[in-house]
Image (tube, rainbow, N blue to C red):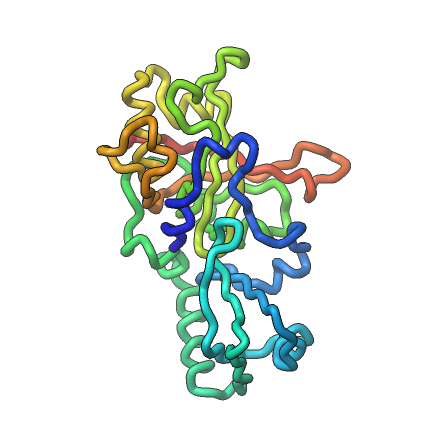
Length: 271
């Protein structure tokens, strides 16, 4: 879905300029996130002109048909942009197109298979293996809006960025363990997820060689095998859809929601 934005993003800038999770000035509040659907493609919309229909959208839930709008990339994330010629048509809840979309949405909500992203052609890549099959399937939006700050789930996502990403930097000699941050996305949201300690050993393998780590990370990030290692961070990338287990926790007891972090566990990169 975001392959063009991924291609233009340099992995070597992740240390100082991490891949954004949203393009708003500040993260959206939980009340706003709860208004988003938990599945399907969620695109932010920006309008540079004042439209009466836009204000009506802000006042409540309303089905609309957008005409003559464009999709563009802002901060590495696709969004819908209005032009001077853009139009919004308000639709009735009984409109035929609305009823069709409602029916399709409800069918997807009741099916574990159809809740998954539709972009990976039914089955995700086999480059990861998970051993958390007893935890719930969830989209990233499901997890972000969970009533419990501490929870576990398994997701189908793409890794759009990693820090560090080169094999020689994955293992921290100072801490004596693998330490890295992955930027995960699905059609509903993006999150940063961390790997460290025994989860890192599980993810990469206890005795992986430099060549094995390079090959595994290239596959995870969608870097072509023919890409030169010196230019790999700028080569075209198409990250595969993969399964992973996510654990949500907090780092500050006094402010659990604002200090929420994601950690990958129970996941092995087999590449």
